[in-house]
Length: 100
Image (cartoon, rainbow, N blue to C red; front, side, top):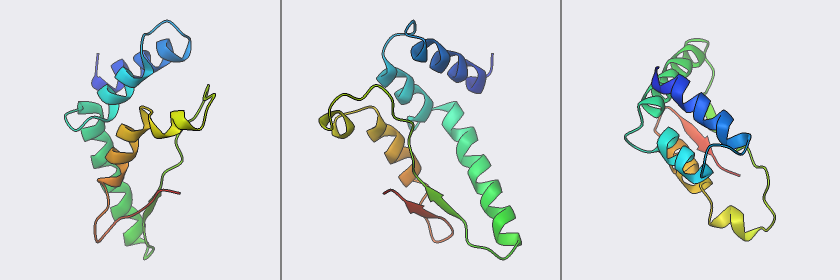
């Protein structure tokens, strides 16, 4: 099973309530050593190249999936920090990252 398929299966189990801690899933999927995230970064770079070839500026706008959040504090201390750090790491002279 590929990293992408494994990650998708883990996500599905977590969303259905049978896969353990969502924070573990996010760490696995978006951690700095994640194979799935390595592939994701490469895909973002290829997309950026296509956009720039069309003479446009490429940007990443972070809009995470949020569900089941009862309190605003959970947004601050949540697994989404890993996700935001991963996407923010894409920022470069060629890629603008916007995190509203």
